[in-house]
Length: 253
Ligand code: NAP
Image 1 (tube, protein in one colour):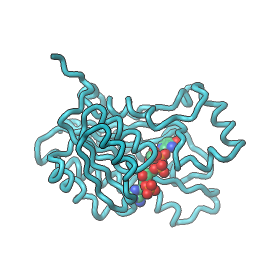
Image 2: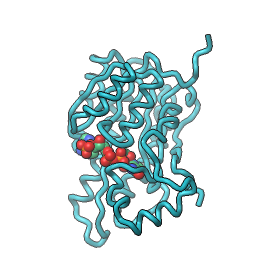
Image 3: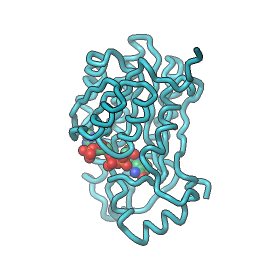
Image 4: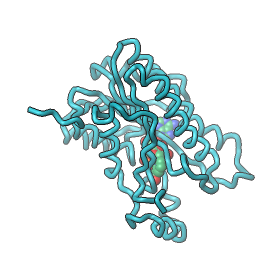
């Protein structure tokens, strides 16, 4: 019997911020491909756990605030202890602060940079240390943004963090590809989640955004599933350092 190159049976994926939105969508897609799932975040992921139990995979939830990178090394070892291994890390948790650049505060800057970039780096480092010590391959998937490629307006720390994610994805791929760790990113376009609630409810911005998306609709969390499974699976073993847009055509305009 041929095994699909997208099969994730006997793999364990850690997904940060999986209680809602894109993290929930990717956790379900990875589970449907066969992976057991560790959900890492600050809010009880009861809704996602219910959906994953319908898929029938093993799960483990770790409640922690990713605004500080201090406790991240324990996340990988706890997952490996409870679920038996750690093969895939999806760095999805992220926040956005909207304010004029001229008024932007140090707190607004630090809050976004800490979750979106600093913790992403140190959790990836803990994951890579674990894999390298065990001489095992692995997959890191960072969640980037259209603002990895574009400047945006009124979101300076978000743009800086997500541009940093694109650069860091390449830098880590360069260092860890030789250890059979793939480091890639997904850049979602405009998806209907809590993160974009302010844009969706602003009639003018909503119309401007929809008018520019060739697919003519906001993305749904399930739209990220195929890209996540691809970058988590053997199918992408020779793919390194890319940021893959999943944007309904936004960047093609
Ligand atoms: P979301 O619904 O707001 O989900 C964000 C997730 O991150 C939530 O689970 C959230 O937990 C978690 N999180 C935030 N701060 C945290 C912290 N300090 N500690 C632990 N967990 C924390 O937004 P989303 O749209 O799904 O965003 C997911 C990722 O995609 C983010 O990196 C975002 O920047 C990126 N993205 C989104 C879009 C889009 O259009 N939606 C586009 C491009 C990129 P809580 O529920 O407790 O807040």
